[in-house]
Image (tube, rainbow, N blue to C red):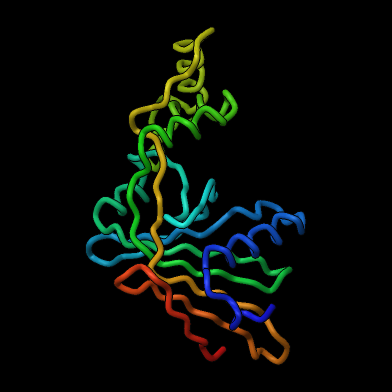
Amino acid sequence: MSLTQQSDPIALFREWFMAAKESDLTLHESMSLSTSTSAGFPSSRMVLLKDFDSRGFIFFTNYNSRKAQEIQENPKVSLLFHWPTLERQIRIEGSVTRTSIEESECYFRTRDRGSQVGAWASKQSATIGQESIADKVKEIENRFENQKIPLPSFWGGYRVSPNRIEFWQGRPDRLHERLLFDREAKGDWSTTLLYP
């Protein structure tokens, strides 16, 4: 189906995301998250998409991390999915908010115990001092020995609510197909074809 026949960006995203998953790509759910400070200095890093629906795209992190601090300063972010073997990219721009505690708790319970310990042990983005990460892991393992590990208060999810989504499909002679969805004031999506 041609991109021009698409009217729902979330349905198209689901189709492309599943195609990437079925292609056995390594970490098909990885995406570049770009944030910026209030002064406009950008930074990007790879994170993992954990869920999505019509409300947006969810990832999880430490709320004291650099990305979280920049989100606090400027809640406008962008995401980029790049699947080179499929010659596809998806660019997403929008506003980000925290998920509910219930959503964070629900996802935290799906993580293996080692990852739960890691969420407690890592002071993400902070400088490592005298105490090693291995020491911190051991301390957390001892603290929660033989009990369920609780959701840390400083850890949880973010939802990126999109206002622009662009789909890029590689074509011969660099005449790539680009379809841009813009969210209108009423919440509907308008579409525009872009030159390569």
